[in-house]
Amino acid sequence: MNNSQHISKLGSRLKHLMLVMILPLLFVACGDDDPVPQEPAPQDRVSSLLTSSPWTLTGVTVDGLNRTSAYAGLTITFTGNTFTTTNGRGIWPASGGWTFTNETATAFTRNDGIVVNIQTINANLMRLSMDVDENSFVTGRTSSLAGTHVMVFER
Image 1 (cartoon, rainbow, N blue to C red):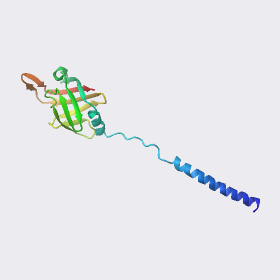
Image 2 (cartoon, one colour):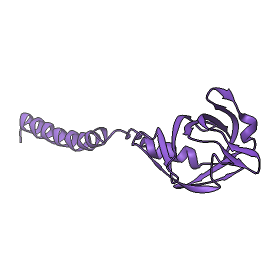
Image 3 (cartoon, rainbow, N blue to C red):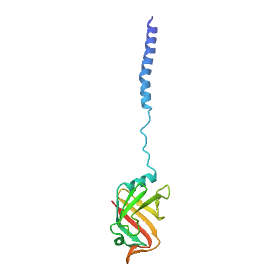
Image 4 (cartoon, rainbow, N blue to C red):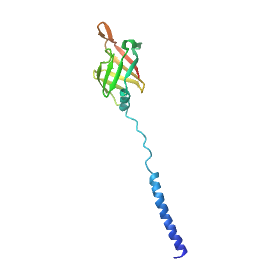
């Protein structure tokens, strides 16, 4: 074997060796990038916020007038598609069910037919609004007031 054949054979082997070394690197480099996390659907996100812990009423207006004292002590606990309350005073039954009215989760309907609009919701604050058609009374006391209620709850 002469020198040029030897060099040619050596060059061929080096090419194969480099190819064998580079191909695995190409496969590693071409791997999928880290997947971009998917944002939860609006209903999943809002449901998670509703159900993560109880909500305590911090303020209420009825037709723009402060009526917080009429509903003092109101708390709501959402679990799945049900809720329980303390001190609901006619505006919120002691317990019931609810379902979202739309896919954007901006409102839900209680099992008594009342539509509750979700104006704001995050981990610490929830602002709901709903229309109540009539006053209700319990032994001479007003239990709930007719009008548009805007209720602020906090954790």
